[in-house]
Length: 171
Image (cartoon, rainbow, N blue to C red; front, top):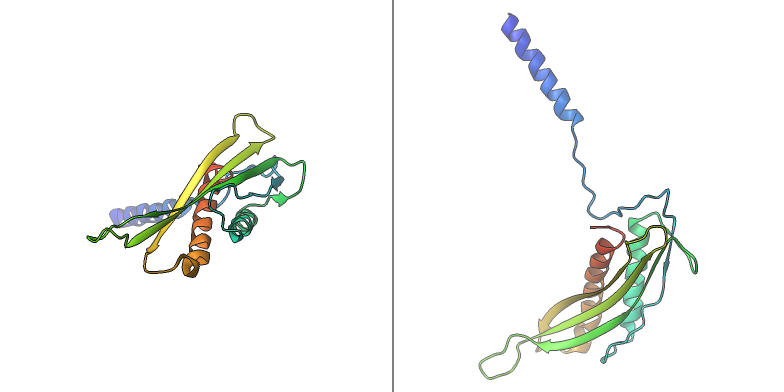
């Protein structure tokens, strides 16, 4: 009787202990103290690449602002702010990838590079000035004009994710 009661007590203790222990990870949220950081200023990201695709600037800027809005409680403002993000699109390149036996490329890579300057006006030593790159490959039988919008959207999403994690995500 004592051993059965002891087993029940131990089992109940294990259940309560297990339920009260939780490990929580937030991989898409910001690592910010919202008592300190309330505002962010995001400047335009002009295209400074040798090859220019004009819609890319708007695509990238919209994706960046939307991502910040969805994943933080920061208010975007013009002018003075707790955090500042600016930069430029520095690269838009096409390179052949898989070459066939007749010396023609069967795949082409579109690479986009963005230089980001991130300034933390509340804490020293957290500023970042870094270039981020991402790419997508597409079949060389496809015309760039047919796949360009979709590829730019996908690359912009990846770049924004990388930039967010390096700055606001504090990874």
